Amino acid sequence: MPIAVKSFVFIILASFIVAFSVSSSMAETPANAPNPIISDVRVGLHGSKTRVVLDIDRNVHFSIFTLPAPYRVVVNLPEVGWNLTKNAKTQKKGLMSRFRYGLFTPGTSRMVIDANGPMEVQKAFILKPVKGSGVQFHRLVIDLVSTTETVFLEGLAQRKAQAKASQPSVAEIQNASIPMPIKKPKPVGKKVIMLDPGHGGVDPGTIGVSGTYEKNITLAMARDIKKAIEKNGRFKVVLTRNRDIFIRLRDRVRKAREAGADLFISIHADAIKNPKTRGLSVYTLSDKASDKEAAALAHKENKADLIAGLDLSSENAEVTNILIDLAQRESMNQSAIVAKNLVKELKREVKLLRNTHRFAGFAVLKAPDLPSILVETGFLSNRQDERNLLSRKYRAKLARAVAKGVERHFATVQEAQIR
Ligand SMILES: [Zn+2]
Image 1: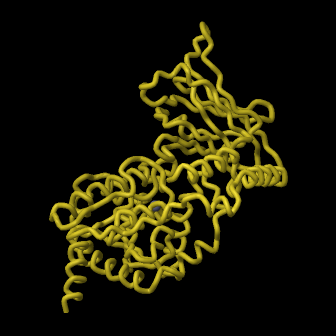
Image 2: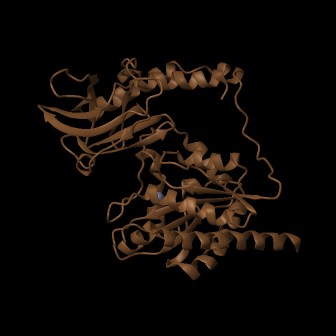
Image 3: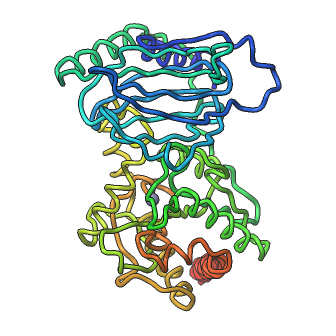
């Protein structure tokens, strides 16, 4: 990104969070120290305040802000390690109904506190360890108090206005060198397959019957599929993420473009009320979902950005609509063909959900010029599916079937082109 644009972004971000931005000296952190470790999270009630306390092994820089719909408090931290007991992870009290945490971008970890109503951050600060008192940790203290919806939204509007005031004018933007969209490099020979492990970092995805996080299953699965596909030497496989980190839905698609991908496969695992429902299914994009379940699933997956604490209220609805319009028939048809070829191979190896090829409006499948499918590998709400997906052997089998499906697809396409 050119420096000019970079600094605009910085100004916008900085002014957006300035209201609650708190910093403290980093002087005591050695330059090459490993990441700070958060070893405990506690929540308590102090009069009308809900106090959330994080134990950290050193002083850190942080910023904090709130978002509506649903009400959340977002805490940005440097990249930290989380070493929490199950007990610490599942706490809720007062205004806090639960919290999530994880890597947000390289170098930034994020904690999102879900609140059960409108609230404000009354104070947020770091307490240093007290010599001789036995308290050996730095503590990040966050005091939340409840407020009315009106006050909450007024505060939000004010912060946005401040952010806008420091935004560059149209002329300034036009004069700044804006990066051109990266042209699809035409790879010689090898087809490029982009695998997209769903969720990650601060967004765990679905949580299985015995506590398995979807984000871990999707990453393990993607790595296995990469291995299986690359075995035959004709494909190059790239992952949208190869670590436990959050990625915005549209950035997943952008990465596929930048890699010059010929096929995009998003990998997920579902959960559903009925614990007996199990099996794999393949989805492709359509403006109309094939059934109610498919629609509900798309709705849930599309909320990933919201879950990670992004403010989508300023996103341009028009842009989204144009993107959908751009999802030309051609790319949708191509995706449907890929799905068919994949299902042919998968049904030999693994249990499929009934009507396995389904259609729904997944945000991550909306690349107009790139055949894209989404594989729900199974239901983490079903014990057998969860066990299978945790098994290396099962994943390897599934990965081989996907690899065969991909080979079958490109063989068919090539044949059609020759004819
Ligand atoms: Zn998912």
